[in-house]
Image (cartoon, rainbow, N blue to C red; front, side):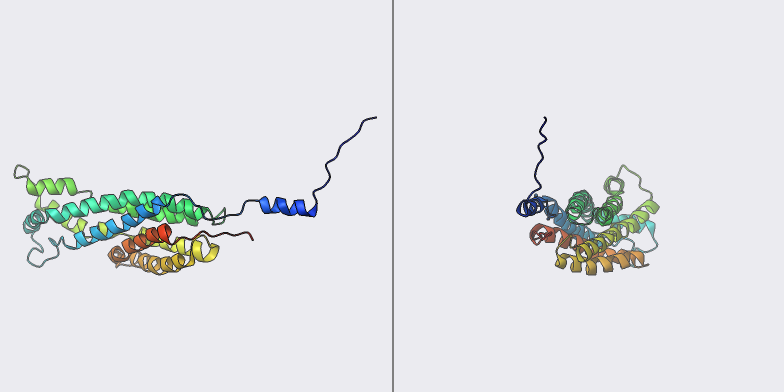
Length: 244
């Protein structure tokens, strides 16, 4: 005669232990270096915007409409062109790091099927591309206006003057990131609420500027938003526990 051994059902106390052992979703406690790098991206963005605003070759009345004068003026603004270049390239590189860290951070608490982490990261990548393209003519213009052996087309110099005064200001993507972070925070508690409200205000303004014909105004608020996000997640992101 065979004997069949059965496992008795767990007592109510054991059942509670099993339920308590189930993992609860919490904000990650991993390194926040990515957030500090993001803050640096915002700071470099601010520096780049300030440098761009000083490159006045196509905006000052005494040079307007004269391609040769514009090009000659750019030769006097090489330091500003170099500051713009380094600031925007570093901002672009650091924005990609912030995008990856922010996506991981939001995915830790956002609903599994939410698109918000991807949208938040995508907005920063879009901004990084604009920042990199904004200084895409640095090599040709700087060497062209400082090397007497090179012949620089004045019309190209005029183009660069307009380019450096517009493309680096396209921070619409940062506004998209801000709105996504705001929704993730305020609807899904995926980030501290103060970060959510701050992102809603700065992100909303930046996004509206970027969509409107005043699109370059986004360059004033976008870098500030990125700086705040970086500092916020680095120093103000308290551990949040849910499930109880």
